[in-house]
Length: 417
Image (tube, rainbow, N blue to C red; front, side, top):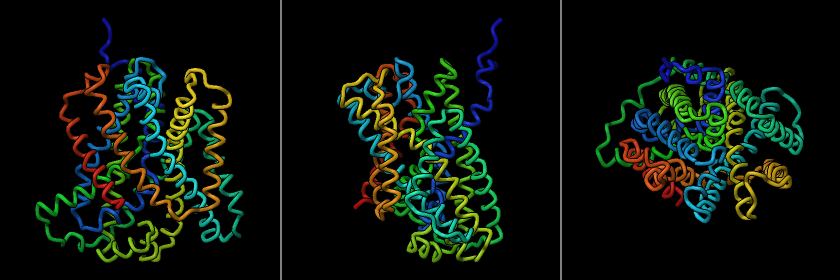
């Protein structure tokens, strides 16, 4: 008598699944989470409550939908750019690939600049070293992070896990460390009316999307599941995404509330005006050497672990753009394309890290609405128009994804003007 499906060894949780869960976590928890308590807490306790309620379903359902979109391709091994062309046709597929690339590449540039600034500041201020040439420091750091990616899936997920475990532990210990400093000033804010609450929700949803987003690595992750588990890829991937959403929700929400409850409303305003992370501001307020050394370590782990997933999406996007424009064969790319794409990306990242531009936040804001559209709306459109995905149509969760996605996109677009 055959065993029940759930008793099959392939479906049991294992170290491979754990490494991938931590890689997804590391991709989501970038430097942006360090600004989340300030951005979400400026209007009082209610945005934080909204985040706590909506963050988990928005994170899990949207990323699961994007994973299902990739895995539904009739030709196994196709990444998101090829799947988009298969389902939507050549022209629309090229447009999706274009949006996909330009939504992720600016974030990779930001990480290249940020990792250089973080390491340079730590070496000078915490370790008391003489400043190192920015040219060689940035080039070495970017080359090292890209080298980990090209070391293969096993090395990348292992390094991402090694970076993410201390990040999880530090965020948790930091949240605990702040408990004695909690105050009730934020809790004394009056309960807003329906109109004000609607506005709060409208402004808060983009923060949830961008702070919990790990869509750039979903395509790479989906193909890894396909190679490892074959026909069981979808249930395995969904379980990993589910567990990851739970882990992200617990640690990030605890961190956000702990930081917010340690600051007064005026502190929130001051931190926003100074444009510094919540950890840096708390270090200034409490004059804590513990936080002084913790802040750059958190930033380094967050940036480095998030880089791998975003680089995977950038490489896929640029490769897809060039391949589609040149009419090449995606199954047999030319050596020039295979080796030229990483070289081009490296020199662009290196050049930006050397120049250290001051418009990074603007670039990140411009990519925000596109990320939300690809993550929330594209899979929903495919679910209701592509025969291979019709089995996912008509579910209540789809309505939730569409509504929250549209609200997040509209709010992000309005914020640009």
